[in-house]
Image 1: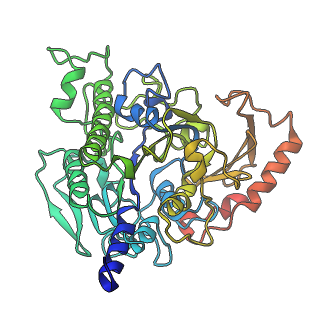
Image 2: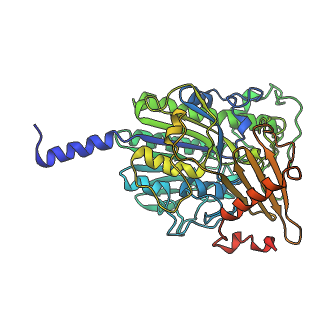
Image 3: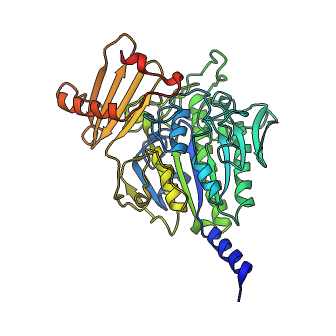
Amino acid sequence: MLTGCALLTTILTQGQTHKPNIIFILADDLGYGNISAYNSKSPVKTPNIDRLGQEGIQFKNFYSGNTVCAPSRCALLTGKHMGHAYIRGNTRLPLRAEDSTLAQLLQGNGYRTGMFGKWGLGESGTTGSPEIKGFDTFFGYLNQQHAHNYYTDYLFEVKEGQISRVPRDTNVYSQDEILQHALSFINDNKDKPFFLFLPFTLPHAELAPPATDMQAFLNADGSSKLGPETPYERKNGTYRSQENPHAAFAAMVTKLDRNVGEISALIKQLGLDDNTYIFFTSDNGPHREGGADPIYFDSNGPLKGIKRDLYEGGIRVPLLVRAPGKVSAGQVSTIPWAFWDVLPTLSDITHSPVLSGIDGLSYTKALNGTKPARQHDHFYWQFNEGGLQEALLKDDWKLIRFKKRGTPERFELYHLSEDIGEEHDLATKYPQKVKALSGLMLQSKMPAENPEFDWSATEQ
């Protein structure tokens, strides 16, 4: 019989052992229709990602935090939507010291925390650097501009509380190295509760996968198996040229799917299956940068719009969650929830502290297809590039507001249950509905604390 310190140690160890592991995979600019479970017409199949939903649950009405990278990740990790978040645009502004993250909550609850991929919420030496915001280990890109280059000569690494710039071989595809760090993290922490955040850069431009990944989509003569291609020529030094952009994009989505399969296989191999949640989603809608062609790939499926739109195609994203023994298999859910709900949901799952002053709610019950007792009355988004766009969703009614300096505001209104493609603007037909929802828009936001995202000038 154990007594005293030995008994206490055993109790603490058992408690840690039973804390569930969390793996959160975040694709970059992957559209709702790029996952074959969401779009049977997709020319690229994603069997490993699909399997997460087959063995768990697939959400049809899940929303990103924004329609571009940095603010969407801010909403995910801080639990605040764009009416209250600090980072509301795609800049290199860091999180502040007072902005608590999901990783910090889990780290404080005894979790080993690792992130591998693209951060986007703070550079080295700022208040938003990953080692300050809750990550024990990190390998990848700190900002979104650097992440455009898959063959970079350096990346950043966090070890033992310190961040450093790491030189690397420019012949090695960064995603391959990022994946290996992720797999090593799982192996190294298999006996401890861990939170693994994987904000992969795939399939964001540039469209430049390794030749070995391209082979499956090229004929022997080097031409594309996906039909005639329109080569992409490098412009303004942003993305490298690509002779076969369709084949390249298909290769990148296929690589992403294969990487998800490798992660799932390792979890099973290590016997962690029954105590690990795997989440898979995307940071926003599909892009058309660097030669990408969302029309050819039907990347938004039945939805209208892409990245940088507040139409459904810009913000509705896939979400599949697998956790054997915790999440019943084979479910498809239409319960709506969003990025800012992830923090309180994972806090609930892991019995971690819950932050006050956030917009998110726990949707833990939704993981088994049950409507939570508390749900959102409405959802709000804001986008600050080239003027102001705002969107509000309530009971299948979607209002979008457009406002630029010196121009009158303009509203579009859609009833999504009857018009998922947002083809029929009902704003003039239902002016009272526009008035009511625009009133909710005003209630849902505060002026931006940082002048970079100050939209007040567009309100005049």
